[in-house]
Length: 352
Figure 1 (cartoon, one colour):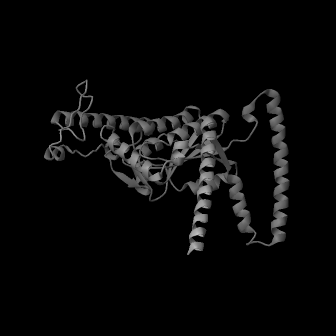
Figure 2: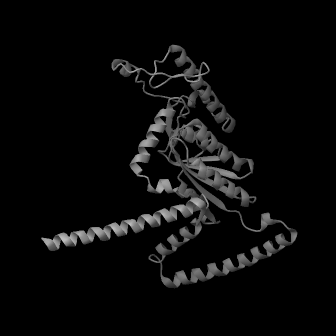
Figure 3: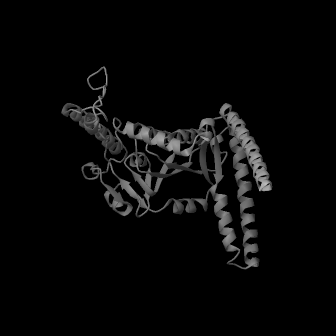
């Protein structure tokens, strides 16, 4: 028994030392990240990935002599193309025209939106980076997936996409799963919207909801006090007694937001029958095509695979560094805090 006790104590000491070392390393790394850049840009060559996948599968399907002969012919053609391209680049360099120093690319972005659209922080960095290097003929594909959220967050996300349009860059948005409400606010900015057959699209409406605990407080003899300056500084509350006047004011604000939403849609897709589609309903991709909400049925995979055959496709992703507190804090505590903040904010901030 003494041996087992001593052995257990030894293991506990080792575990304590290991945990201490790991904690120190995490803290040091976190401090370095805190003083450095907030994030970094990651670029992935999707064309190269596509070619590698095809080559790997073809190696199991075709005879080696055939593949070798084809590869030789392709390399020869590629060499001639590269030589011709180099001559063009030299000529453009002499004339000082950087717009012809490379061939147009397709840039691929991803936006998987949360209710507060916090992902817009990365989107704005990605858009800025593309605009800094864009030339005539460059295009952008945004793979969009979100059910919407806070008006100001998705309004800013839409404005980021408008920056691409203002620069004359063709923007295509692909919806593989869902782009509803605030998601459709973003999608309508595009030159073309592609939707999977059963993707959820639409929901051009506004909602705000919150619980009211006033009766529960009264039942338990708990008073709630709220002091404001300005008649409509606060309309509906979670703990106070709501009035008909406050409800009417809040309803008018919801209607105004819906009106702005519809105006935004009409500006970017003027051919839509808003009386028919701006009812808050959502539709599947094939239904949305008939209503004019989308332009084509397909997936982002089809679009990218087709583009990889004749040009370079680059996925651009801005990765934000996590703060030290975020690294050390528990995921459960963060989730609870976020849920509370979102629930409270829903009471006064409309959701699209």
